[in-house]
Image (cartoon, rainbow, N blue to C red):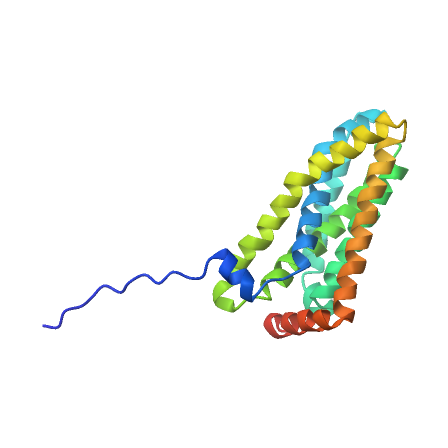
Length: 219
């Protein structure tokens, strides 16, 4: 009888080996900014509301989650219709709008303004950034690519809260309006992130980025 050998396990490429050949470039920065901005309400909304004299913040999270869920279902084909790039830019726009909207909050009712914009941003950004990042990798490495994008998201959460805290502390030390200044800075960073991402598509490397995303995502 012929001897049957157990096939040896063939390991795939490591993270660094994979990134040397294929990587999503600036989209990793976008993933980090997404993590930082999405995590802000969970950490800083309560002290912000307390400073504004607002006792109830449940309105924000209720509206945010409802809008994010409904928008995700309603606009589930947005990345295919608009293209991944445009869907990401729309998400960045709404997230920046959410940050700027905090400056208008003076009651529990007005918390719906950043909640609506934030929920829309979440529904556009999360699936589009993950899909856009993994589209740069071959199909057999999409799992590792997803882990890479989510790792950058987690990195944004990790460094975002300390940076926001430093901004608040520094603003108070300089007798500046801490929360309006901080929310404005984060909103400005999101606008700059969108502008830089757009520039990548208007340059030669951006054309390569666009080509890869179209070919591998089926646009």
